[in-house]
Length: 156
Image 1 (cartoon, rainbow, N blue to C red):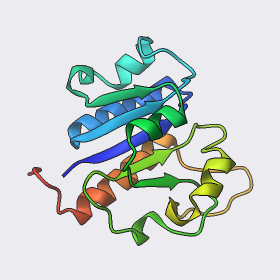
Image 2: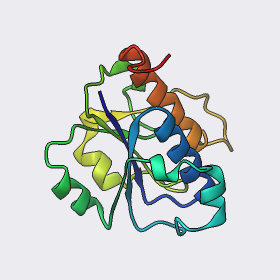
Image 3: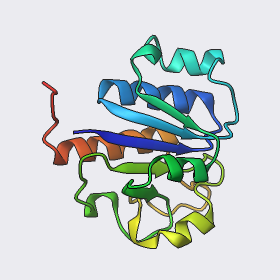
Image 4: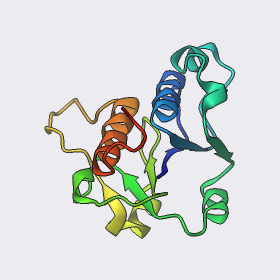
């Protein structure tokens, strides 16, 4: 079974490096939709991802449209903070895609509006100045829920 994580225009190199590391250790493919706010050659990305980069199943797309064109049958869940369905409400299937938005603004409202039925959220307290969890933590939470549902395939 294969899970796919999609990062929409990530901005913080350390988050992307941490996510890449999580993807490698969980046999999850990482898809990045650009533009990114940094270069994958930056030392912060490499340091956060350790020496796992050559083990990563990775694809880069120049735009959301290119991502959709190259993955025409993708079953995509859109992770966002202000939606109804919880990430635990979904029964995930082989080869599903879970998209996370950029750190400062999330996934564009136009994309969310066109995909309301497949938007998911991680429940959080509503605190005035605290908007959301760190992106790499959010990805890890959702990845491990999917793996739990699949009974952790291939893992000891």
